[in-house]
Length: 288
Image 1: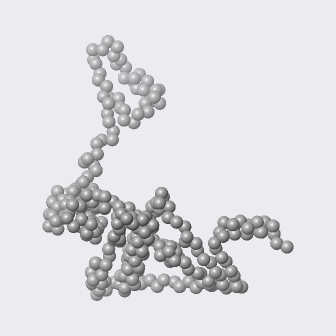
Image 2 (image 1 turned 120 degrees about the vertical axis):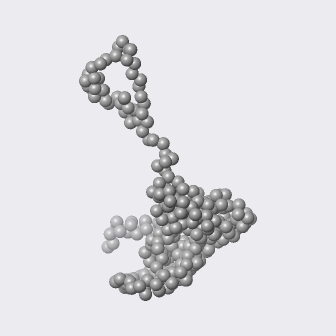
Image 3 (image 1 turned 45 degrees about the vertical axis):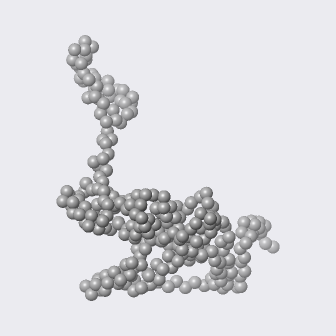
């Protein structure tokens, strides 16, 4: 006789997941069909950054973007350990890797928003964006299969790229904030190209804002300004230390020597302040 508690649990599971089918054959086979029929919630954005995924999560995300179903039927899983290259690269290896990277450099691009018209419905735009984003992911996956090429983690959440697309479309000035210690490391040249693609008449302007400029000397700032000017790039040097006002304000109370009620006993004044120090709660207040 089966346990009543287990029977109740199975009933709840069946009621909660009516569209999932599960059929077993001994201990080796299982059939499970995921449900990707949920519609997009246009009032809620998933802005959780996703830069690194394991193989299973990446497979599920790709299937969801494509809107396809799949069947997982085998339980006996074999784990294949990753083969890592260890050791110190020789000068020839470094030069070979550099040449391969330069050869495929133009293929590292940010995803573009597909063309759309105001007559298209929200569902049509969403579908076109998903297909285009999935095609971009596939191209990067093929690129990563090339020997001597390793891609750094990149944003895999479509909603983040959608925010970038909307911002570029609605903005007249697009500012990239880079670190003054290595501006070229954080600069995205393809973003500038994408802005020019959306604005052939040059109504949209690209600007590089070099943050933490106080860490550079005057000669270094001039050198970077000349470098960006030679490439026809507008640049702004910014330092938060020079622009931010002092966070601590001092309030001075004038002392009138002619005041007949002046108290010269300094020790007694200090004791009175210590006794009533709980009343001085303003961090920006000082007595001088």
